[in-house]
Image 1 (cartoon, rainbow, N blue to C red):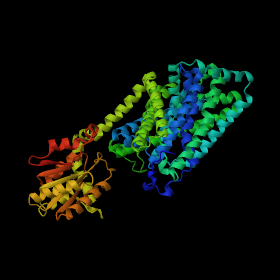
Image 2: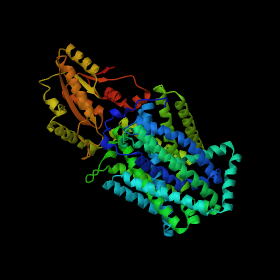
Image 3: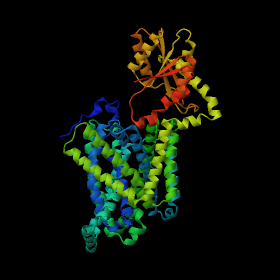
Image 4: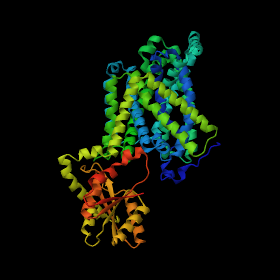
Length: 627
């Protein structure tokens, strides 16, 4: 490998070996349980496209080449991000937090459609065993997702060993299916395979691009490997590489071959009307009922397992976005009895249910919608890694192969956006809504609106007082509540209040100089914990370590200059409200905050503090900027 960047895993807080138990085989199992499900519905979806039809095997084979290049980039994404995060982490590092949020929203769209299409496809396969299910696919699919929501609310843990069992069973049955077809296919049927392959020369460029772009759906689930980094056995690079090799080998042995067999050997009537379950039809045609039932049992189980995995993955993305301030904290509220994030689970379940209702269980339409989030996440991951490689001066042949891969994925996404307007509208609507929520959450539009209601506004002071009392009573927290600080203002009068977000020695030094210039010997340093869900009993009151550390560092810096610094903590739905309240009760004449040169996007997201203080500080209190 000519382009090497040191693996950051050694310094990771999750690098303890007892937390990293996924061997390459288990990595393969978890990923195959996701990526392997596409085999059950993609050939039929491709065949239904008028510009694809019998050329579906060609497009799957060509997309497989692109998949090979992209897979190698996902291995690097794994070891570059030992704590996981996938597209969110890569986009955040390469571009900006808002693009990291955009990546998270794209992957959520991916998860929504994974849940929906997996549940519907699972029911369609069961319908080939139990005909009564066929007329109630939508109802059974919704019931399945509701059951999964209940199970996740009660609390389950995914088992890598269970994934291994299911992946192995499904893979062995697909090998059995291939073997049965090879044994029992007649000579005239093999002529159909030859004729299918012979069509390659007649494909026109745009038609090829449409088929190539649609065939990427056959490799949905590749992104799941980047979420496994925190659990991979060290060294991550080796584990991810070997696990990915197993994934590539199994996909090579199954997806292109079975797509070719299904499209070449099944009748046009079956391919068109039973496109949702071509694998079971292929098994029944060549191996009889037992092979068909084996495909149905393993396939439907794998599909429903994938639906559950998507729900779990989606609500974890929600929690991550909420933790980073891109979603309301209410989405992270936990069930009092089971301790699970019930709101996030419900959202991750009900959106796929709405999608199923809207599509009426049309697998072809669901596949079109699926491509938007899938290819969008691929584009951000691939291009983000290119940017990181360029910054680290890793610009050899691997870099340029990576750029070529990005061009392929971008081309596929753009073609899909053009060819599937409904999917584009759906995806843009969901992601646009998510981005609006992210900006609104960061700018405090929603929380300010919420706290304008009388019943919420009336409860807020009592809730803040309750949280501060808990901090006062907690041993080992060397900070004061705002109420405690107010009580000692006669003993430690000051004209200066510092509002802190993180350690800032320069800000502290500037405040000390100001206070000394006014003849004072004490200053107050405030950290406001922003929590939207103050009126919710389950909201956490514990001060974050970032705030505690910032205040402790400020105390040490002030001591060295002979000034008493009083560290103060309070909680609020809006940092501006907390700072204004503190300035009023502490009787200061100046509030100092740190600022820096930031992008326009940063000020869009975080500029509410500066703008809010300018408007809301009491008369006679000056806003002083440092930086």
